[in-house]
Length: 154
Image (cartoon, rainbow, N blue to C red; front, top):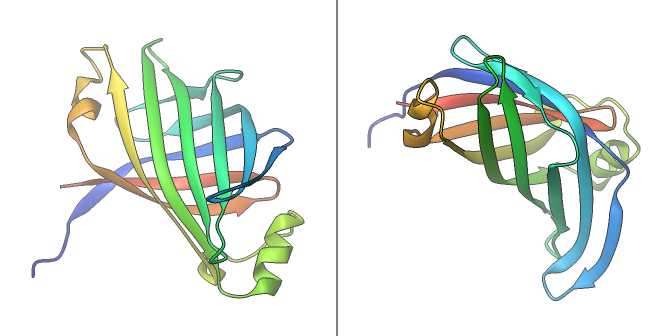
């Protein structure tokens, strides 16, 4: 097997609103977190996360992991709109870590697993390269919010 190579894409920070508990579904407990804003910045693209158009449909699974299903609308600094979706998994190393994260306490990002697989869609010719890449992200909770360091897989 060969090792994957990557290069930094951008860091994105999401401001989360209060969650809405949708209850226990056949797949687990579903909570919806509205994304009230945020920002992203990298060498090739930067901008803001538009509020009221973005959200995280988080699933607390029976195996203790959390599964993200996120849709974001980004506005690049040149006014281009970029649609970003991602699925991901967060799993804590222990129940204590999970409880601390739920309370918004600071927890070292190495104490839990938070990875995402984002995809992009844009009509912008300047940012069309985003339509044709595969990316991965490493995440961390930052108080009540979340941030990801994204990497383009080469």
